[in-house]
Image 1 (cartoon, rainbow, N blue to C red):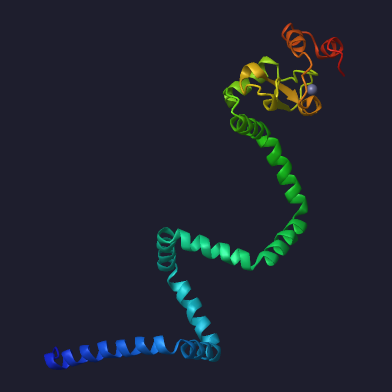
Image 2: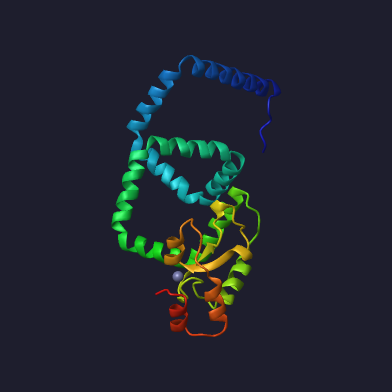
Length: 229
Ligand SMILES: [Zn+2]
């Protein structure tokens, strides 16, 4: 049998609830410190119970929590970024110490990883790097990774200066710093050693090396003809 509700009583209850809410809000505004203190005391006194409750809740409401967190992240990305930045700023020393400890504990893996990364990203990196420099200097020209692969094939995967078949870097014949164009007409593959030796000065004639290579002479002849190692 359903209980018959007294409309007057219901109205009174609603009024009481509204009154209480106003009272509580006023109290919270007037006594912020007391509230914080009381909460802290309560937390300390019931810490174990509270934490256990929170853990149990987190365990049984995983999906609900994840969904709520996702919504929050989507709606307030700036707040989260700011909070994380603030946290990082407060913990710079700890972060540094942690990173240093991690590096030390994982020294071998880190070195190995970096070597593998460099090896697999060298071409892409040097291409990106020269494109960046060319753009920066406004020299004009364009050079794609496909063109770079074609150019290396043209040189039979050899350094245009010494003829060595080795890992090749992109060398601007007229350096970008001297307004050299960032395009296939001004780029040759060069080994790291030749590329760095050349510096920003005028390059040695590489066309000879190219013509020799294209005519099919072997590496030894090529080195002798160009007067290089
Ligand atoms: Zn070389």
